[in-house]
Amino acid sequence: MLTPHDAQPWNDIALILVWSTWLLFLVDYATRLHLSGLGARFLRTHWLDTVVLLLPLLRPLRMVQVYQVVQRRRDRPRLSLYARVMSYAGLTAALLGFAASLAVYHFERTASGASIRTFGDAVWWACATLTTVGYGDAAPVTFWGRVVAAGLMAGGLALLGAVTGSFSSWLIQVFTREDEKRPPERG
Image: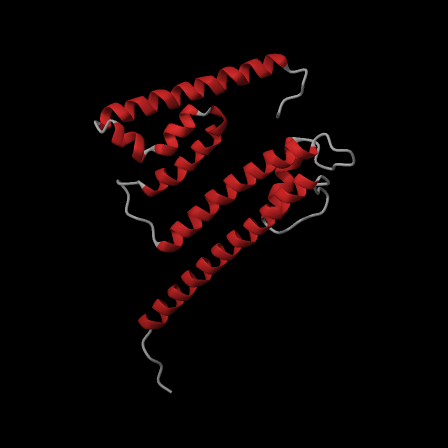
């Protein structure tokens, strides 16, 4: 979808990379299954990995594992609630923006009168929409492009609210600690 139609050599290279990546996921999965010693229980507890491995169309869902990696950092101390909210919001924004860019590019690239013609345009549009800036230089013209846009706007507002609320709460906590450390003023 991201390459021109006349770019057959690049399509072949991309296909080789995709299947190589899938093979790496397969080796990773088989290794974890073998080392766990859990057998069928491993399949039940890692059902998303199993489904993604078996259904190649769902491979992008493998990115969800980023959340698990962030959660499992055993060698580092656990992040504060505020840092976790910020990191999850950032990861969610990146995944949401990338998925929306792909979807809008798919729907808009051949539409007549569309201002989103390249994947770069779609990424620019997603960044502007997700951050609620909305320059207006690019906007979807198709029905499904607008549906994606509405979802991205709602997601962007929710993420912005979570980050702003968390940051404000952290600032209040810092200022409260500073006030408690300061000796009382005599008046």
